[in-house]
Image 1 (tube, rainbow, N blue to C red):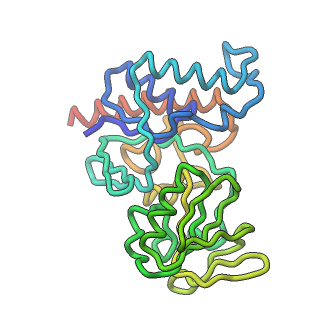
Image 2: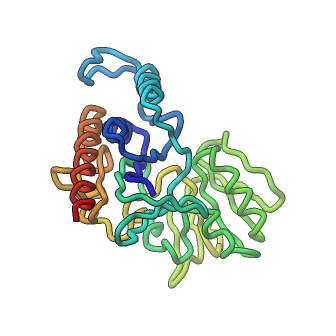
Length: 285
């Protein structure tokens, strides 16, 4: 049982991890070992205190070095669900469950909007986890939207189960070769159906499917954590970065604008101190 599970390796998640590690808390940090691609792709960063002019790559490397100095490891697993278990949270990755007394969501924001119908059909034909739900589509026809080559192995896992897999990938470099896989061009305009998913619609065609898997590095917060309050597309938080769920906190871009590194790092620190206060109160009861 961890004291804190932190989801996200951007400035907010890293800031929270550093503060909690310094307070000798048992933490687990989920995210990419390369940290945030948003940071690494930045040409110059000029508005972060103490760094008058630095490249995104240098900033990311400095963060990586600081994590190493603090002996903070990054667990490179995608969390597809966070479940309130009453006195703790269960973080699901494939068939593994990581237990923590508290959770800090520092997942950032998605660069693309959900496909129309995506959120409406979650649990009724839309899934974000091949390992969790792939067995439900044995011998069936599915569409798989894959946004990263790092997730391509899940496409192959689904191909071993399904009768037919339609692969949609925005990046031509994303590849998954299997006799059952047919690659489609274009981007879906809608996921349609009635009680369950029936089809995936494109601009010039519609394909009949039994389910749609969206394999991406971040799951929408409203789907990730059941019952989480969302306002204007962001996680609703109080000034102390607490959400409407006891023991669940959020920091960084996922809580709203401005989308800036300094704001994210500051909120990560606030969330960490709020977690410390929450743990003290819980342990004192």
